[in-house]
Amino acid sequence: MVSILLAEWYKLRKSKILFIVLTGPFIGLLIGLLPSDLGDMGLNEWYVILLLMNLTYALLFLPLITGVMASIMCRYEHQAGGWKQLLSLPVTRGKVFAAKYIILMLLVLVMQLLYLGSVYGVGMIKGFTDPFPIDIVWKSVFGGWIATFPLVALQLGMSILFRSFAAPFAVNVVFTLPTILVVNSERFGPYYPWAQPFSMMYIGGGTEDVFFVPWDQLLLVVGGGFIVFYVGSLWYFYRKVV
Image 1 (spheres, one colour):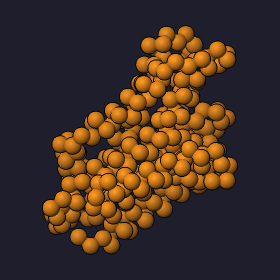
Image 2 (cartoon, rainbow, N blue to C red):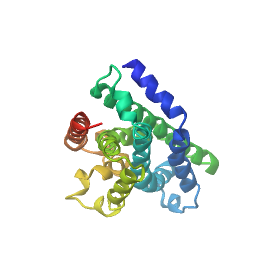
Image 3 (cartoon, helix red, strand yellow):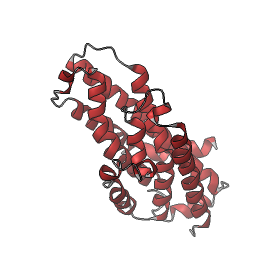
Image 4 (cartoon, helix red, strand yellow):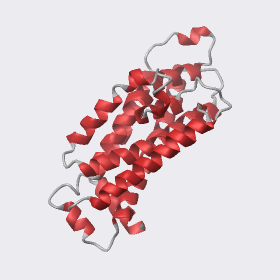
């Protein structure tokens, strides 16, 4: 398994994955540096800037960027019979899928940590004097990473399904854009996969809840969605003709 992980990482080193990972935190930084007057309302300045940055980053760019990274993970295999060459080696499809998924989740974690750095950098540049709410910010950043578990599994499955790099990205865009409307729906918002990163990073909920969402929603939507999408994508991969 370790050799497969190293092989996947070696392939990514020759891609533009570093630029993709930096894109989200950089956009969040630019959004955070925009002028805002919400601090005059008496709220903690860090809360205000985190809400503003999450509104665009977690709602749009985090789901989109994870989809791009999933497509890059399968790019080499879709070229010149790469799947046949890979699967002709003494490896199982389950290990190949798991290795790609683990690498993707580690990249998303790195992106989230860089986003945390962007939030802190914005506060330093703007000269915030309020205390930095490390517990709240960590719950938001780490919760956003947890929320991508089912979404990345689904996106990896779509990237294996489509040979074209643009096809899975287009599907991801189609389902990401409605999130702006769906997230406001009490009926559909809590169960929409593309809305989970924003829901988990939104700090407006009760701080006593884990990741600002109830335990039942976390286990049912995120945990259940991960099992369904991971198993479904892996099942398709096992049936895929190469």
